[in-house]
Length: 103
Length: 268
Length: 194
Image (cartoon, rainbow over all chains, first blue to last red):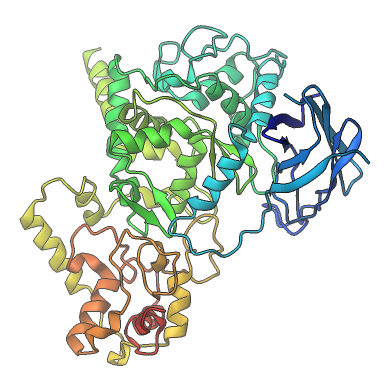
């Protein structure tokens, strides 16, 4: 199964910068396809960034976020080698995640 | 709760553009590119393309592994940068799409109709196999110099045809490619138009397609770009891998020869 | 045998002609057919780089032909409703195979021209038309502008501006409305810069 997320976490000055690119159509539910049929809504509702299993960022998204969303966050308290994880859940109940260690 | 402290979410990229006064829409897309750094959502499509290449398909249940893109069967690295080029087995000049059509029909047993049925995504689609294949094949030439074949007489004739087609005015609006792409520093509305008759403009254009189209969330090929230009020129539909499509791409590739491939690009 | 070789050779040459190559490369789509690929005299004459030298005698003939075909609007009424004209100027649809043939065509003026100075999304393939109304509404100016819109080649041979009247892109009423958008003192085109 091909990866659905590219994730990196890097220490910079006094914070850790996390960049995560997620694969998701983020369909608003308002578009119609070529035949005129409505394309059902399909978007990420919930995103969490975890540092060593503790939630450091909790985000609530919706149809306004564009396809294949990119998330960038900074947090303090991370150290090299710590595990950073990004988890998402969409309006269909599907979920995806990615994991990396802080460099 | 640990000691982590959020200093700020510095970028959540939202699909709602604020109405800002910009001299060029590229401003917001440049911001997006800066935020992403060297990331590009095309990476997901590249993974798909590679998988498709190695997956058996068609009535003959064969993969594309033996497909010759110009550097020998199965050699993908560097192949895109040397297209379009003359292929002796078909006695014509082909671009990547025409060549993939040849491999899909010869190796996999698909019919030309099946290949031509839906090469490019329509509204609502999440990408076609052709788009994924071209994304991966082009990525395998990233950083290499654009070097389309021009040693063979047919390659040179194809360039000449491409140049003639570039200036060919037709349709109710009398548009040619030149209408929009013959001058430097021009734009339609807020979309900058490269001057494709110059090395710099052609290099800029040819090196960055195929590209992830942010507004569509999918990868689009140069063949699609040509088709969509023609649509906007009020022309009928340009077929993938056709003589005119190959000739126009040859015109761009030769004009831009020497510049480095950067595809897949990241465009509005 | 040699005749056959000659036929094959010359047909392969013909296949390199742009028109033949396009016929071979394009298919009809919705209401847009390959008929559009056929060039008229003007298109054929103008299918060259803008830097190329032009046959002046032929250019003069084509300019005269373009000018003589420009009709005077009915009732000699050149000006319509600028609010409708603004819509025509902003509408970029019409005659593409993705368009609905039942909908009216737009002029897409903003693709190439600046018009209302407060509208920033304008192209620069053509000159700015902001403040166009300052030229006044003499019959000479009205007719000049009408002719430009109907068939610009009457004055500017091989211009890249479409023949909005002569090619049937816009109706006479739409052209009157665009004229009003350009000339009417109340039109946003003629209001001063914000």
